[in-house]
Amino acid sequence: GASLSKALPKSRPTRAVPKVQRRGYAIGSDIQITRTGKPIVSVSGGRSDLHFACHTATVFGATGFLGRYIVNRLARTGNTVVVPYREEMFKRHLKVTGDLGRVNFMEMDLRNTASIEESVRHSDIVYNLIGRDYPTKNFDLEDVHVEGVERIAEACAKYDVDRFVHVSSFNANKNSHSEFYRTKGLGEEVARSIFPETTIVRPSPCFGYEDRLLNRLASVTHFLTSNNMQERFRPVHAIDVGMALEAMMHDDSTASQTYELFGPEEFSMEEVAELVDREIISHRRHINIPKFIMKPFLNVLNKALWWPVGSADEVEREFIDQIVDKKAKTFKDLDIEPVSVKSQLYRYLQEYRISKYQDLPPMSEREKREEKKYLHVID
Ligand code: NDP
Image 1 (cartoon, rainbow, N blue to C red):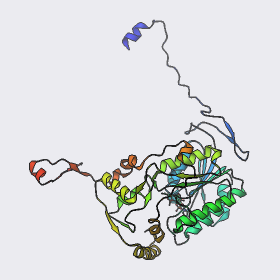
Image 2: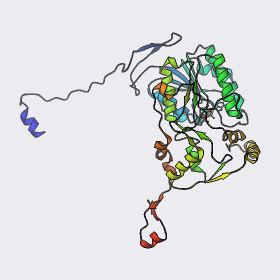
Image 3: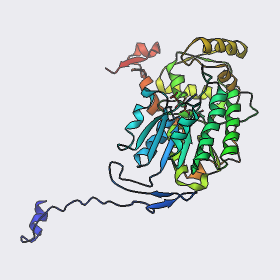
């Protein structure tokens, strides 16, 4: 600093250069014309300065696990998001994902057509993430995966919404033994028959902070299964699925396509459980109960209890490996490289890690002889 000020001529005034905040359209054009000829105008400003386009998107099922990974992406880049919801408390975390006024909530019931129409009528893209792993008191799987989809697709067609992205499931197949896969398969057919340009998305079992895969394996001391954890699948990162869903909005060539979104590696449930055990440094016991006992037992339990305890169909699904439809498009077609579950284990499982490390070396000759491991308590 001193040598530099000496080198500068004395007469040269030193002044602070004002920081000019650049406003404008960072990428692409400021007006886009959608498939049905609607203009999408970009404006910039506010917290979400980085604008691509100001779409209006409805996300059904946004209050669930995957929902936040798409609402967050849409809202933070300045799109207006409509979130149909059922329960006040389930939607609150979504409000802060965008600027004031960007995230709007609409009360909705899957059997109330008017409420569905009200949710989609201002949007140019509708995502449907509504789904349930088990039948509930008021809705069986067909109500949710077929009739619900029918009502949403009909509303999209009625209000000439440009795009409909329907989240189905891996293994969706109308001839499956599993009611879940069967109704998901029928749902896809219904969506395409009413709204032929439907983009169908079939995610693999997802992992993330709120998942039902790593959390389930890490949180229970005894893990009950019926197929000895032999089912094989390709876990996918929830963030990658969110990224793919967002990319679909920006690329109209994804209309009418089917995407299978799966992770880079295939595992059996047992292999994932081993990875989880290693990461949390404790052993979760596994108990296998035959299918013929487990199914009726869960049927009774599911009816008697009012919190999710698993269902007979989930037992059936343990016996079905994931099959990837070779004809469907994948992450590659969206220029996304999916991450492996192995690389994210610490991130999602660190709170399950025990606070004592048993993997430190023995501290004395006696401990070495006895193969006793040193317990290190962090606090
Ligand atoms: P969640 O169970 O976490 O969320 C489901 C969403 O659907 C919630 O918003 C829920 O609303 C809504 N919903 C369920 N039943 C009804 C109903 N009868 N009426 C209105 N809304 C309803 O699921 P995910 O976020 O994990 O999954 C999203 C989609 O992706 C689902 O369709 C699922 O089948 C599919 N999928 C998920 C996979 C995964 O591993 N997570 C794997 C493959 C497919 P509310 O909050 O009010 O209950």
